[in-house]
Image (tube, rainbow over all chains, first blue to last red):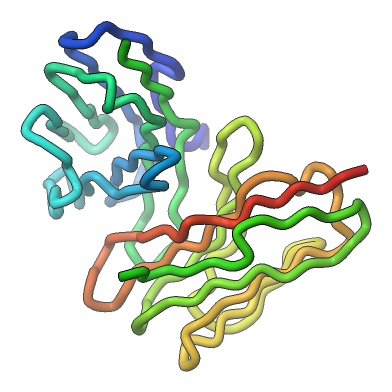
Amino acid sequence: DAGVIQSPRHEVTEMGQEVTLRCKPISGHDYLFWYRQTMMRGLELLIYFNNNVPIDDSGMPEDRFSAKMPNASFSTLKIQPSEPRDSAVYFCASTLGPAGGYTFGSGTRLTVV
Amino acid sequence: GIQVEQSPPDLILQEGANSTLRCNFSDSVNNLQWFHQNPWGQLINLFYIPSGTKQNGRLSATTVATERYSLLYISSSQTTDSGVYFCAVVYTDSWGKLQFGAGTQVVVTP
């Protein structure tokens, strides 16, 4: 298995622009998670899905953030409009179930200037 | 308050040394994992260990769930062990939400 695949690896955008991050989970994993990592706040859970349905989005910082999972093999995290404070590394992870090992993608390093 | 506490925050080791990293958690868990974030930023799952002891090469981990702590042992450290080690838990009443500690930054010098 190729693991959890995220794209792009790096994204530099101007403030106010829309940013879309993409994730392909491991085939057969029913749970998908989006995390954000910053120096100040560490690794934070933004949202997670079970069988393509959003279960908990309490970590999504603002209405500017939205996430979708249209099918079992694809998810997006969108920021519109982006702001410099959104600069961070965004990770996607998947697992068979919450009582099991989680596999993380390589992350997307987002820089908003 | 702090829900996953790791210690020490930083650790400098000479190659070949052994070390122990600690993770304390505040309530019952049904999932505990240790991750290594390498200098390139990749998060690698080392152990899934909600209880008991596991070993993988020079690394081993022990979780004592009743006392709410887990330990990660690194033996005969190598420079490739450098990076940040994270403990992450899913509390029983927070189903699915893997919560991370602040990590232990490990530097192994030649």
